[in-house]
Length: 501
Image (tube, rainbow, N blue to C red; front, side, top):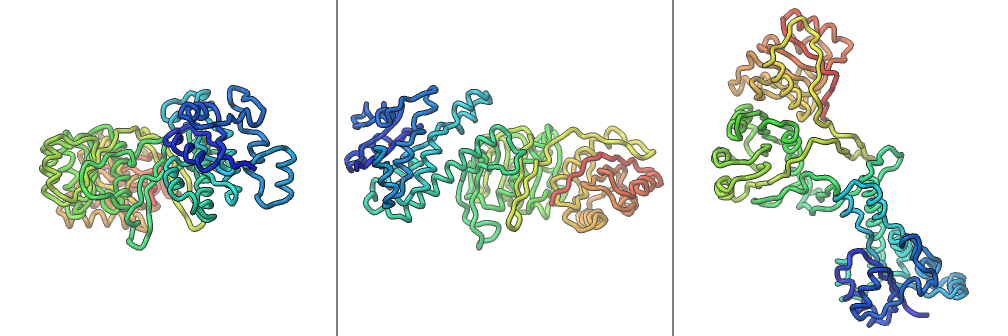
């Protein structure tokens, strides 16, 4: 029986050279549509699929390779007498190589939300052929990646079963990724089974620790960290990327100029400012000791004045929406600092995924929302206090729970997070502020979760806290409200919790 290779590709990179190679190796070339046209024009002897199957394309090309003479030639088990007799009976030739890549759904999805256009770019025949060939990899070589052409041509006679299996698994991964893109684009998450499309950005030197392997993947249909441009410095680490993520989220949380300094995946200083330098200096004043070796995120362009301040201290990364030429001239003199230019994006909902032992947790992110509250105390906050309370409450969602944040004049004064009891977070932040000679008198306090007891309010009063915001919802809310009334402290309930574990 004749040897055949079926070639049908949307991405035609290198396909002419590959087809000519296979033809010289004695393979008859089957092809479809624009691929067949290109190969013929390039001097390759090609048999059109419709001529081979004696079944013309139909339904605007939707049906052309979905035919027994195609799938029979791919799927029959070599060496199985019954299978071989059956394909002879129906005059089916073996198809020994399948080189297929798919309609450009990903590229289309990045350009349009038009449903009809998207549907027309969902490939049906291509995934069917890839999966069929991959299932029968012992007898069929499947090629879904144009980057593999060169290796195959250079090593054709030594490609063994193990390598065929590798290409088969690559094809299954490719079709799974393709299907997941469709699910992602149509936001179809409410089923019992979901697909997640992940595209590798880079292998990392290691994970959180040197003994852990790691890589960085991106959601191909959303803009994020992976789309940022590194302008200077050594390669980003796993831990850098985690910290950049927190920085980036805070950058998108505020419309005004904000600077966040992140250390070990939690902020150690955040402030709004009238300009980049002002925001940075205020953020740094919260905890200049912890800021050493941290990551700076600022939702504007780093100018000369800010760059001069940053250059005086050691930081791992600076993330911003841009860097002036003068700022780059200053900061690039520091060999190891990474400078990351991120795209300005909306703080929109997306899925967060965390692994558990043998499973995954999937949730929507805690996206930016309108600050809504009820004043539940007798004392009412001033407008300035409301602004500070909103600022502190927004920052609290980026601090590890239990989170307590003290703020004044849109500047964080102290942060308590990661404690097993809320009162410990209240006290920890106060102790840290005292160590750094930061006066909390006159500030506001925000808590990411409700106060289970009145002790947090009692302690806040001793520290000079003048207004408090928390979600509410405790069975002892009345006791907490009573404490606020006793101390004359305005107390706001938001009904929204911001746990971050």
